[in-house]
Length: 360
Image 1 (tube, rainbow, N blue to C red):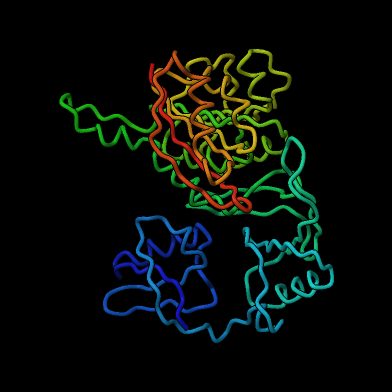
Image 2 (tube, rainbow, N blue to C red):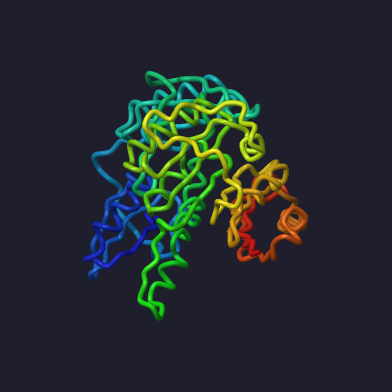
């Protein structure tokens, strides 16, 4: 059967396979194949593969020893995988339970099955889940070499945004590296960067950025998310570079923090972040514009905003750029470096990101 694959030189095959496995992008239903000095690795989502890899279509053999849910059901179910959990979105309870039984009975390494029971709701953006199989709603998710513990019933997390998060992460320190061979011979490091995530959740931006050596502040209004952020900092060995703050970032920047979670080993919270950040992540696409004043306050003299928005396809980037200019000018020169469509959100609506540089 023709399936999408990543083709890698044989000598780079294991490293490539490991990176794809860390991102949970390998399709376990097909065999890996070596041919003409290349390793062909079957993948689940070609659109999620980093641009550095070559994606091709190739005929691969199905794994003979693996029974899939499709084999047991007679139809191909739709679900997302997050760690060892399968996430369903089924309105029919009987169909959902049939799919859950097949997933558990299959040879896939999945132990938990959850069905969405509500839309994302409230200030903390969590949803209700129906537990169809497994012990609870807590999972361990691996993404691009990082490990995240989280409870889907208590925090917001989207595995679909892994590629977009990695795109931002790989920018950290990139300018320093490109400028490292300067006349003086001094080498800058990503550790020179201060990164402020205004809606940090369990740390999918903060943790990998800290692993690149940057000093990070992660803020979230959800105390459960902050607890998991602290735990994930420990799991990934970056607790000395992560400050976790439970607050509305607007209160924090104004100096009137309503509540700050104890950090239990993560660095104590600094009292003031005005002008501190070299990079600000604003991944709250429905209402990020309401937090632009705070973002401009924490921005340093040369700062990049990663601003996420949801807009109509007729003008997906204009409203965000106008809002940023209104908040930042004339104190800063504003330049849009990247306009990127992250994904389709709804009919005629797009989830987009603007990478915007602010310079005094």
